Length: 517
Image (cartoon, rainbow, N blue to C red; front, side):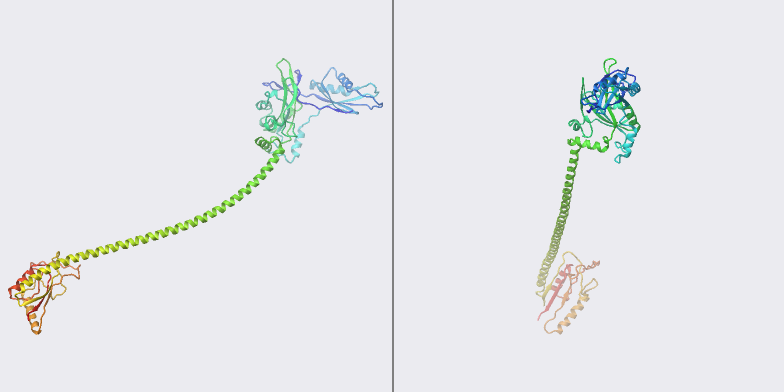
């Protein structure tokens, strides 16, 4: 025969106010009450007769009678075999625990059909978590780190807290902080049932008993779990010492009526509030994943996708580099072509400009030549006009003369009154007088006598035609500057011609005379 009863936590019971109550939060009407539980072990005698049985109910009633005047608040069978029966008993107050244990240790039970007395042993329930236990755990675990929050002894795990006492249908984080800040400053906290990913599935991890738990007592129908991380190690120690082996008590509206609820507290062994765990839960909520397995699969898939995108990015980067190089090559070719085109256009423009300059220069030269021609034509026309007039006059005057006019050349200058003479032999200044003319006439007559046929005398006054830029100072004498070297004749006709020619200062005359036969 064997039986085992599972202990259920979070079931509120009605209790009365005792001296053991410890104030936790008066604004919420919460107190703490120490748990006064003991283990009772009953050693069963050996059955020699077949069909002989032992009544558990009879043994339970005998135990209740042995502790009077004290009473058990609850007495539960934890385990029952042929050799022993183990009970879990809860007393009304912790102050009566020592007396009850001493009474049970001194007693022995007698059962019908058994001659041997039944021995009873009682002991206090040992706390699950102690300081030595958590110090050993965090020291021996290589994955823990005393310098990082969540990886050291700083987080407590609260189980089976009544939801109604902390906000109603859902627990309110601010009420949780107000209650448990009594032990120290809180760094972080987490209520798993408030997470959509965890509340939808009932629990966030198969190893952790979290999420909603149902029980039936009036309107109190839900419990929740919570993780609280303290900033200092002292706050963690105070919370563990103050909450272990305690019940949560709440005062009802009725006078002297209280509800007590048993909850569990232990140090966190799952790194629930570490940075890595918080990141995992954030990813679960963000991507709508159910548990850690899905998160692991998601990470592997994301890693593969990342590798694929990195390869794709590398390929695109190589293509981009090739395209940039090709574009640079094309641009360099286009730049060279544009530069060559510009040079060619500049060369053509220079040729056009040079050609235009040459044409302009040619036109200027032609214009100058034409102007010179026009000047020369004007001069020639004026010279011819003077020549005709003089020649006619000479012909008229010399008809009756014995000397005949052979030729006459009269270059004229209509603007300037100055003349230059290249031959000093024919140059006449104001110092010449009639004696010079007589002398030349006599000399010419002698030459004419030597020649049998003809004698020619050339008299020339040259105009400065070969040296246009050479100028002489004007004569300051009152005498005329133009002299005509003609043979002096006593004939009045010749003298009249001479006088008429001498009146024109700008006239240069070349006269050739031919003696009559």
